[in-house]
Image 1 (tube, rainbow, N blue to C red):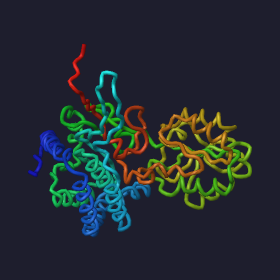
Image 2 (image 1 turned 60 degrees about the horizontal axis):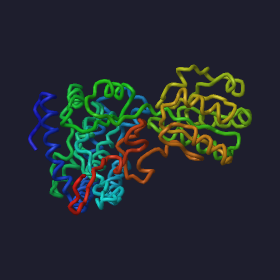
Image 3 (image 1 turned 30 degrees about the horizontal axis):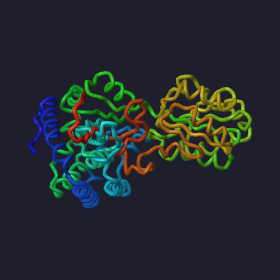
Image 4 (image 1 turned 180 degrees about the vertical axis):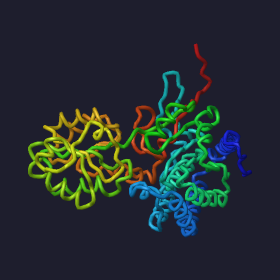
Length: 421
């Protein structure tokens, strides 16, 4: 593929036209060829792991003063490169979503109709900080027959480029067009603007990043957007919770990785168990380095915590900070979530099945969990192999976006000479 021109608008147009041309080959590619490209790309990631980690070290060195959570999102190490490679292999092992007959029926006049899955076309992926998104998005788009143009943040540009080179190596070796997976030539914001205005060249924009990025995309896009709001996730500990389970699940939900969108940001706990359980929960998390923003009832039980404001309850911390509120039951927990939540992921911890069902039915969020950590809101944990993002909108897809969610459909109609009266 020719080098992109320096002008970001021209670069985007060239990339998009090349991607559009690549979709023809991808749509016709047998499953075995797409899987071969993914397996070869996985092998390339392992082969070039040292170079990828070195590029990542340069990214981190070029961005001093990172918060621990941001640094964790940006960091690549041997284990994370291996996880990327395994992710590609897992996607290769999944069924091909393209060409699936979603439904089939026959009309009284003898016409036979099929609704058949097909690729969306050209995906524009705009993401921040997490360089593994390069491999995840490329794998899912490739397997679902879509071309993708990836624009990562300036803080991960070296890492993303090194990962992209491995994806191209797999495409080339399998005989698929290299333009099926492209990365922006720079972190120029004008390239993002060109992507957002590329109606007719890009079929779908997927933003994956902070509130500022998503807001800009939604405000400026002239291309359909598959977006997510903030990951303002709640864990509600019901009066019927097993205390040991509640402590273990909350510690994981908050502190496993504080910078991911599935991390719990607010704890809601029933008033009837708060005096007994809250001190232990606070002590557990404090030992892991967590700080707190708490309502008056919580501070009466555990003195010395910082008072919470409405702004705190509306904040996606992405850090070792937890908002805490005591509630009177399921109904009040749901009221709080509806007011402050982002419809991403919520969890209830309880042994009371009726309360769990009331909670799961009452939330509007894309994902609800019963007796499990909110950090399971991840495409790999759903069996999708990877994810291109978490969709919190109401159209097309919700929750982790995997292979099936990157397809639309068309109709095939089979007749025997019918004409319309």
